[in-house]
Every structure is written in structure tokens, then in C-alpha cells.
Length: 163
Ligand SMILES: CC(C)(COP(=O)(O)OP(=O)(O)OC[C@H]1O[C@@H](n2cnc3c(N)ncnc32)[C@H](O)[C@@H]1OP(=O)(O)O)[C@@H](O)C(=O)NCCC(=O)NCCS
Image 1 (spheres, rainbow, N blue to C red):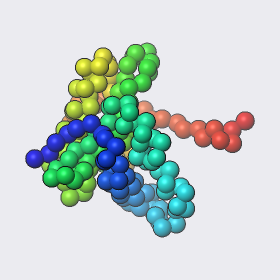
Image 2 (image 1 turned 30 degrees about the horizontal axis):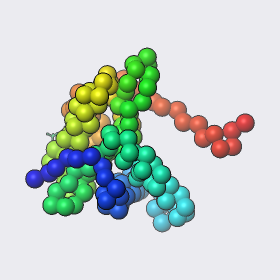
Image 3 (image 1 turned 30 degrees about the vertical axis):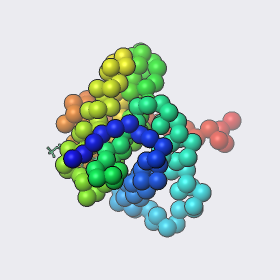
Image 4 (image 1 turned 90 degrees about the vertical axis):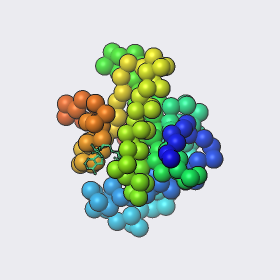
């Protein structure tokens, strides 16, 4: 029996391992990058479960884990943000992942629906989710939940060396 519950401090080690596994899968699969070539400091910063980010999402109360027999088999990191496209409260989903042995059993769907329904109770009017366009399973999952995809993309600018 899978339980969906809010992210807690004690989940950190298992969520970290699972999120890094999913990031690695993506980097090696879609981007053809060699994981072992990545510097340890970079790996430490990857993902929403990285140190300060984990604490932020845990405290925000809109992030979830799927647990089966004491094991974390899925996660979803999200927060409610103000004013996107003139919508006052939007649930922003930063990342979602399910352990490969537990995929295609409805866990991702449960995580997404729970987050969306809880956000609705808090007054959110919409959900935006970050999807890598080449992740077929993520696209299909979001479609099944009812997300609308119009091909929009997010552009990203690293401000560290920007003047
Ligand atoms: C995307 C992901 C979270 C889906 O989780 P999941 O628990 O396997 O998804 P579900 O079992 O709830 O699937 C729900 C629906 O999504 C669609 N779907 C999920 N995986 C699919 C796949 N591999 N191929 C086609 N459709 C898929 C189907 O419509 C499915 O319903 P169905 O099984 O009744 O046909 C999981 O595959 C994953 O962790 N992938 C790696 C990380 C990732 O891509 N994260 C997304 C961030 S970009």
C-alpha cells in the first residue's frame, strides 16, 4: 500500500538518493553525459533535495513523498508562488520522480494529484510543472493528469557572472 504524505526531515537521505538517481538517469540517458566526470561539488548542488533547498521545500509544506513499507519510492518538490501570468497563486512543481522498480503503478499520478488538490485547498488557481521535453514519461504523466502543454519553454540565465 502506497502512502502519499508531506516531506519530513527524516526522508532526506532516501529522497536525496532517489532524486540523484533520477538526475543521473536523465543526464546519462538524454544528455549522454558521464556521471563520473561530474565534480563532487556540482553533484552536491544538484536537485531540489540538495541541502538548503531540501529545508526550504520541507518547511514550505507543499512537497510530498510516496512511501511503501517504510521506503521512499517517490517524491515531489513544489511551492506556491505569487503572480505568474497574472494568476495570483500558482503551484510550482520543481521536480517529481519515482523509483524505477515502482514506475507505471500510478505513484506519479498520486503525487501530482495530491499536490494539486492540496494547493487548490490553499487557494492556488493553477499548477506549473518543470518538464524536460524529451522525458516522454513525464509528458505522458502530465497529460494524463490534465495539464495543458502549449510548447512554452523557460529560458534560464545564470547571474553569477552577469553584469
Ligand atoms: C515521470 C515519472 C515520475 C512517472 O511516474 P510513474 O509513477 O511511473 O507514473 P504513473 O504510473 O503514475 O503513470 C501515470 C500515467 O502517466 C503516463 N506514463 C507514465 N510513464 C509512462 C511511460 N513510460 N510511457 C508512456 N506513458 C507513461 C501514462 O499515461 C500513465 O498511465 P497508465 O499507466 O494508466 O497508462 C517516472 O517515470 C520518473 O520518475 N521518471 C524519471 C524522472 C522524470 O522524468 N521526472 C520528471 C521530471 S522532468
